Length: 272
Image (cartoon, rainbow, N blue to C red):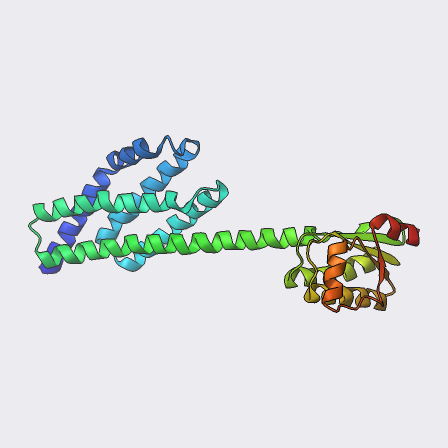
């Protein structure tokens, strides 16, 4: 009998929330439409879905509610990422409907004269669904954007080390900006692979755009030169600025076994 009573009031509260769905959506539409008018139809769809999920979670088990929530979250996440919207847009939807639907649950619990334990059980399950929505959206959004950022960084890293073929035998590799460990490894890989792919015999590594060279950077560059020589590519370093040359001297970096020119023009003249 107790279980039957519980199912009765849980279904009644669920139906009450669903009966006010359009009113709840209009409250949010009026509140947010000016900010995100370009995707308003998408947000309207989100709101219908999240109200359905919240309402049905009142009378269903948590596992079912969590599954439905994840399906909604995947679509919400895709929209956020595709439109470059902040995470707070989705979290606002989740949090605002916690308050709006929570008020309905409270009023209906009073109308059905639910005991404190019955109300606590009801609202606890509802809060668990909302908390899961916030957690899942936050974690998924962070992972999705981290993946995109890493992919963009990898592309930028690859593009930052271009090997340009000047003649059938001569190529140029201009470097710009700081060289860290990751970029130095990419320099090694790119110089070897592209040098071999382009059938180069000579390569100029131009350092005129590199602001700082320390012992680590110099060691990496010299290892690239040594590796290129092993596959038959003669290398010249060009564009080492006076202040960098002075720093290399103070650091005791030995460049006597490396061909060095003052600028790219001179290096190309030697090869051509």
